[in-house]
Length: 383
Ligand code: HEM
Image (cartoon, rainbow, N blue to C red; front, side, top):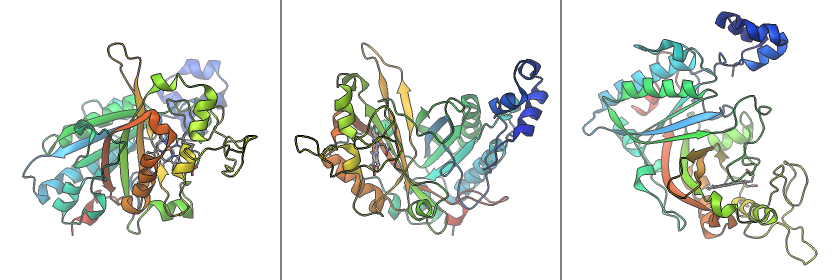
């Protein structure tokens, strides 16, 4: 990952002619404030946008391939989109970019491609590991949020950059595919909090504390397959913020087993304290109840773990509703069947959070390995 240093930041300020910033703010502070020119390398053994520290904005677009598209056409599509992504993520205009100025501020833009079963089979590979999930008892799935053939996951710290990249990619994709669904999501803006701060979801919870850390051996073993690929589960989970509001603070903390103030387990004081699942209160009940989300989400089998990297969504309420909010739950793991499914099955059977959360969309994608310059994402599938 490359971060624009102080010199690059100041250069960018000068290039943009923002003199008032340099005259009213100390130079070091000004350099910290501008990070639009920061780029994430596109080429490499893994696609970017997974081990990358999450950007503030992400849009997930699921495309349906046109009928009768042959293998050669799919390869052409992937070459085109790879080329667009390689340029845009480095702050360069895409080919035939009519608004190149919009691409000049990558702000850690990444474009990650995911393949649904149909695309994988068209390429000539087996889609056995990326079939739709089994139906869970809590699911209330709506077809308009399910599945797809090609996923574009576009993320940046700047929403305008995401919008431009989305448009450029869809311009090249439209001869081959149509949009099935689009899910825009967000976290806190870059610079609002120290980078590395665990995100908060729209229930106000610190969400993502217990998660494998990118670049560690643990993460690599749980997420990456030997060929550099991984799998992605994306679930649109509606969160009933209105009824959540009716529960008192201790009830809300009880349902997860962590405090709202800083995400510490209710048996500890700091976010990363280890929860004590055996601790009991004066009445003899466990402090973290049996149906608390963190107790149910933790398996005794350490290989049944996933890497969570979701985003909040907040759509416009209609009528007398005051919210249409939720979580774009996204997880990466080597194996959907061995890591994600047992975990989701346990949560579907019992989880206090189920009272306020409803999965309404679901999809599974293969995330092919990254590629080298001159290649295209997904090339290794075309045997
Ligand atoms: C932990 C919220 C859905 C898996 C947590 C935590 C919160 C949370 C607040 C505690 C902090 C942390 O470690 O991240 C939510 C909400 C959900 C949701 C609001 C739905 C809207 C899911 C789903 C899964 C999942 C669908 C997987 C199928 C986990 C795991 C942990 C966790 C593995 C860490 C458990 C541990 O401590 O070992 N979640 N979650 N969550 N959640 Fe969720």
